[in-house]
Length: 126
Image 1 (spheres, rainbow, N blue to C red):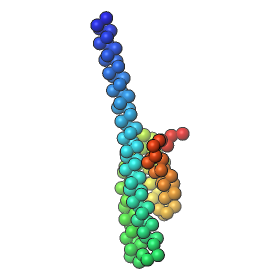
Image 2 (cartoon, helix red, strand yellow):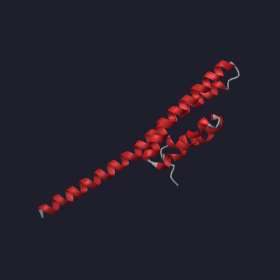
Image 3 (tube, rainbow, N blue to C red):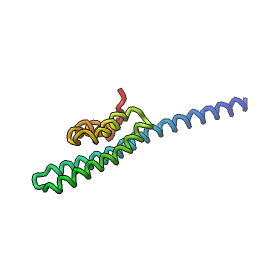
Image 4 (cartoon, one colour):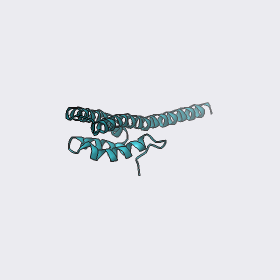
């Protein structure tokens, strides 16, 4: 009987550990997605500043370059999120288009994805 109790205790411990570790992976992915979205939000603010009527040509160029830099920073976090949880692939894919597509065209999709990441139920799965 003692052997069965030890066996069951070990089994419960292993199952509990597995559940905890699997939860950490998905929470880690959400954290990475949220970090990526912080850079996205920063890029949007910089892009909005560049669109201000008072911005000089040099300021517009500088602010847009900084916005692109923020998107590039966001990309590494999105890649980590996707690596942990493939449901974050839309974030990574959209950010990956920043080199070819004007940022203002990507921002609506990024805002929607980031609203999910920052919500109480941050899951992009179907």
